[in-house]
Image 1 (cartoon, rainbow, N blue to C red):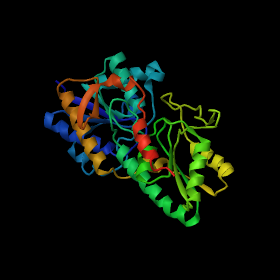
Image 2: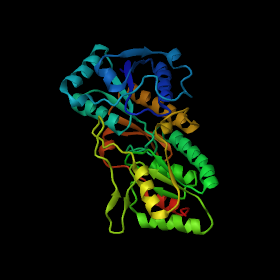
Image 3: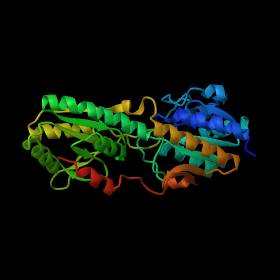
Image 4: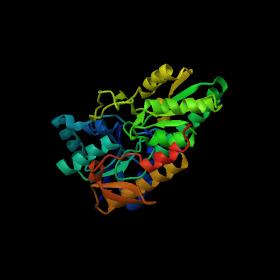
Length: 347
């Protein structure tokens, strides 16, 4: 029977992580399971930094942003000795399972621990990018969309007052969900995402026509990995080659490149705002609190039944579990149908 579980948060922070921790601890008491919080993600697991969590420790966490367990981008599989230390920590504290709250990178490490080392693991998807395959929504996404939408709303007033073309660069890595959702909700006049090949001439034409019609300002939402091409199909905005701890290519700077191109081709005053880590911060909105709570409770239920190697997911309007290895079965992308709807409002 499951009696002791560890929980960690890995990768970048996002709103709703504390709500997951709270739900796991509170629900675990119902099943008579003791929860151990692991500080600083997999780094803390390798360094044996665990602490027992009780109801008092999670009181007041529901509306709190970030993660009280803190987080790092740390991959123990880079060195065999680090994996051994993780296993030693799990054995020392007699953990019957591990709940990994993370994005694709952290969940991938959890999957490796499960498949290669036999560690009982459950995965909870969290990321403002919303790019984890197998679930419609990740913890943190809805709050990031709300934050980014409010930022775009504020850019509207300045753009209109000064006849600017305003570019808002949003996070999302290789996925356009955040930029597309916030761009549509915020009334952006054009949206650039990784999933759609856009010719610079088409963007310029759309913005010029908008200004000719008497609308003297424009808002362009740009995903950090957005792609722009010239008339010959050559990429003129490209992804950098730097990699993070998980081996993922880091992205940023697309907004600056788009701005420079538009300055040359438009003849209008173009300003850039990079929202950056503001999108990760703040108190989670209601949907993220609910999603985090449902995910946390479902993870504990599965653990109580001895079901591991599962991903807690949201699919077709309900919370369910899927094989954890589904995270590597494809690349989650913004649908063409969604972008087509958004494109209705370009210009």
